[in-house]
Amino acid sequence: MLSDVSVSPAHASAAVRDRRIGAYASRAHRARYLLILIGLIVAALALVVLVLSWDNHQVPFSDRWWRVSRMRSESLTVIALVTLCHSFATVSFQTATNNRIITPSIMGFESLYILIQTAAVFFFGISGLVGIDGFAQFLIQTACMVSFAVLLYSWLFSGRLGNLHIMLLVGIIIGTGLGALSTFMQRMLDPNEFDVLRARMFGNVGNADTDFLWFVAPVCLVSAAAIWMLARRLDTVALGSEISTNLGLNHKRQVMIILTLVTILMAMSTSLVGPMTFLGFLVATLAYSVTDTYSHRRILPVAWLLGFVILGGAYFLLRHVLPMVDTVTIIVELVGGVVFLIVVLRKGRL
Amino acid sequence: MIRLSNVIKRYGGDVEIGPVSIELPSGGIIALVGPNGAGKSTVLTMMGRLLAPDAGTVEVGGLDVHRAPSKQVARTVSILRQENHFVTRLTVRQLVGFGRYPYSGGRLTEHDEDKISEAIDFLNLTDLEQRFLDQLSGGQRQRAYVAMVLAQDTEYVLLDEPLNNLDAQHSVQMMQQLRRAADQLGRTIVIVLHDINFAAAYSDRIVAMENGRIAVHGTPDEIIRDEVLSAVFHTPVTVVDGPGGKFAVYHR
Image (cartoon, rainbow over all chains, first blue to last red; front, side, top):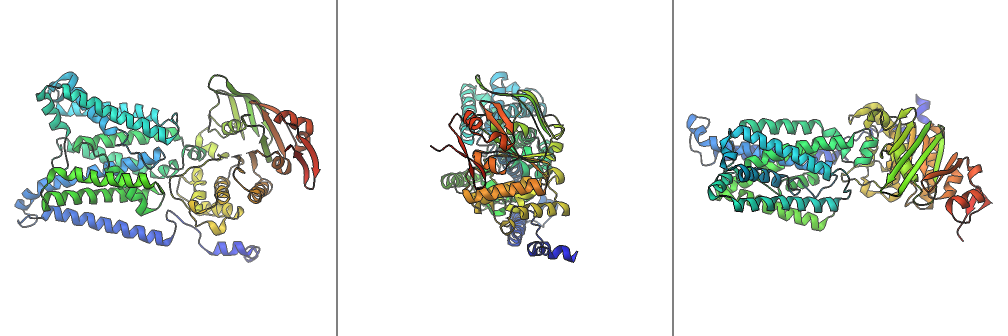
């Protein structure tokens, strides 16, 4: 044993030093990550307490207190779900497509959902929306969107187009094209039909479409859990198609699975509050830069918490402190849009 | 043993690589040489199952690489391409750690950690292992990728132009390290080389390709000859006896 070590001094020192590194580049990185995680958890909890108790003069947890807080807790649930969807969908989408600029929203996943909603009213009239049982119809539309999106985007990301710039261009054209098609159909609608459609589609954080929350919530949680289980594979998929194939992953199949989960998450989020173009980009970009690790198990929770704090914070400020409920989405979009521009323009380390 | 049987790959209408049939014995360094567009990289990526052939079969170490379970193939043959573009931020040690993925599924054991340290030390990256990849020079980064495929612990290692963008010093170091990997670790290394003289100096077998087919293959003594090289490269080549063995001159 001793003689073994003394053969080469370089090896001896290497054996003495613990060289394992794990998910962080150094101990300082690890400490910083834990600090950020704890800070975000505290901020999120504080936000929950603040939203529930702000201007609520009843005895805490009494019946009357809950009566005031019920709607607020529903909003908090919606915020938690929407940010869960956007953060998990965006991070895993960017890993699957091996880029850090385009997001599911930018690529038109939400426009697709809106197009399907609009097309239903356009071709089948109001009965298309309210005639059949609302839930069955919600299911059909979601299924339509998921299958169509998986077909479209797996073709787009199959590597046929190869480079990111062409993909971005094609994706944006598809996204805008789908949006334009929806707008066109909406123009041709009878005002009554349009009104029904509007009520269904343009939810926002303060006034979310929570009819199917009992269904949407578990679907979101299961899809997010599935992404969590795939996290180690995502770490490898992030190395690109050739290296992950070399390491024994069926890259194409992994990308298909991820795109399916992303589509489900985006459909759920859009059904609750409508499109949020830059939320996912904002939280994913911030999460990459504060975590500074490749490990998805570390990135995903931070992205979610960041999203919850940002969206929840905006909601709290605009709903309770400055009463401008409808602008929550707009403010988050504005901040997200500015961050997007800064990142794209600087295009330093993505 | 690597066995290609009637392997064909078509690009568009009129570009066709193959049919290629060849048997390469295990052990040592096998160099793939030939002019641009001869199909060296295509053949290598088909051996490494990154590219599916339109016809024919590829067997490496007794496995049909395009049909055998991916995880099993990943423990038998590893392949590294020239351009590797990562979006994630990785340290050298983390990158090399990915080489253990076929065994660990991302959960590194003590044994994996030992293999990682071994590969890093083997390529003289010990002092750099805490560095991020974007803090390295081109040559160092290339070595880190090679360390990753060595940590993968496969009998066959395929490298697509590992000397690309390396200066004289780093090219020589890289070839010496690959030579050691073949001799000391018993790996079979198949390597696409642009510089015929590196192939002459370091390889045990040379496979010369031309126009999508294998023109000639054999030991360096059989290939490094005026008439063979002149025909393969469509350029007058004169082989002279240099201080370190035969040397092909074709620069004027």
